[in-house]
Image 1: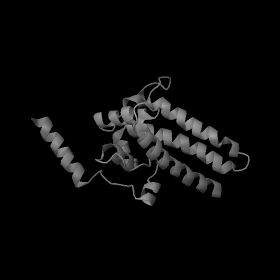
Image 2: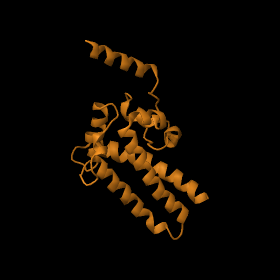
Image 3: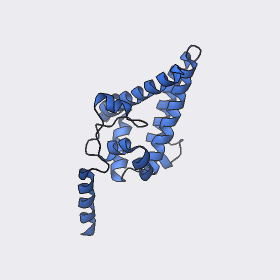
Length: 170
């Protein structure tokens, strides 16, 4: 049982740190492999109000979605040698990778679902500070490190929607 809890906490910590330090810090350099996250994924989300069309394409295309799957598979593979000594921990890492992929994909295919079930991830993409809210599946480490910034349902979001509606009306 402790292996499952440790695996969930560890996976969420890795998710938070990888998102912050690899995808955003290293990934901002255009020549870097990880730049797809910022230059493709975040661009699509801002342009399409959280929707990312890459998640409706085939995994056989080399795009942000397939690169994400490759990174998740590599992350799980790196932990497989622990299976004989920490089976529940290792299996939880595998479960967490699959959980991450399906939740992340669903949040970018169905933004309304994201607003309901992953509002912190919606806040990450649509809020004014895209360098916050690093957790995707859970905001646990955003609370631990003080990087959780709420946007959905705030006055700031309401003003943004009003500005957009006014712009569309003209």
